[in-house]
Length: 350
Image 1 (cartoon, rainbow, N blue to C red):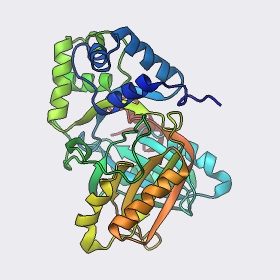
Image 2 (spheres, one colour):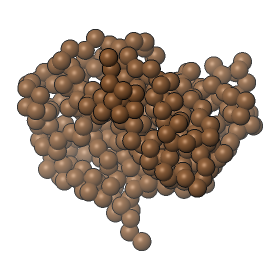
Image 3 (cartoon, helix red, strand yellow):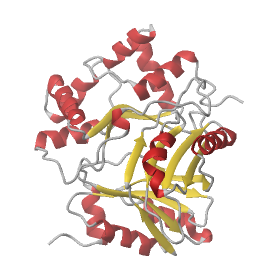
Image 4 (cartoon, one colour):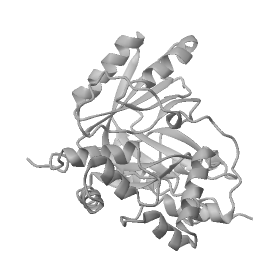
């Protein structure tokens, strides 16, 4: 059976890798990609449009560091009555700061990420979601230490399950406190480049026209965001399942406290691991290191987990599978959605 992923040819796969890993920030990025791949600019744009049309590519945009922008965030585990989990997920997904929301095969069966802007009280937002979703238990799991963050799906399919890869600097950003100084121009550019990049020969010029700036000013702002650590990278956001990565597993580990500094980075060094964090524990949740793994099939994820276990010697772990995706998007910063949700659930600010 032909699927979106199997319909891709080798040039499509090489292009999608480039969009994820090394998108050129220059006036004519699609032409630059064409030069790298040996195809015309028009063909690059046509192939990107086709990848979006079949659902393999979600969008191409700036990927900002939520914490560096002053937002508070955490992964949240909730225990929901299985008979009403779809309704609960709908309530939670309506929050503008919920970017990921998944059903998983565990007693804690609903997992979501929640972010709130600077000046907001994270616990107040979480309490509303706990109460309105009807959760039996809610466990916030903020990042205590970030070892790696960065989804890079190898579309060629040549990376083995136990492959290692160096962790780039933008995949392990240093934690930052407080909201950064951003003027109106910077906020306008952030609002624009967090959206899908226009598929035209001079996309940054098109962005500039929308915000009243020149192409050079837009590119300079993006470079400033990267230099200040506000933007991790400018890259494609893939639809894992449409791209052929049908399995999405969260492997969680009980790592001895005295070995966290050694084993956390070691786990992050596996190429199939897209996210690796140290998080808090609870009496009903003993796992302190989280590794997100994407594979074309379940056995690929299982092979990576086995390779991690063998390399680290950590035996106590659990493998939670995503069984339903309720929401997967990028947080949209500095938009009116936040005010609308706050006014409806927390009351208008005094």
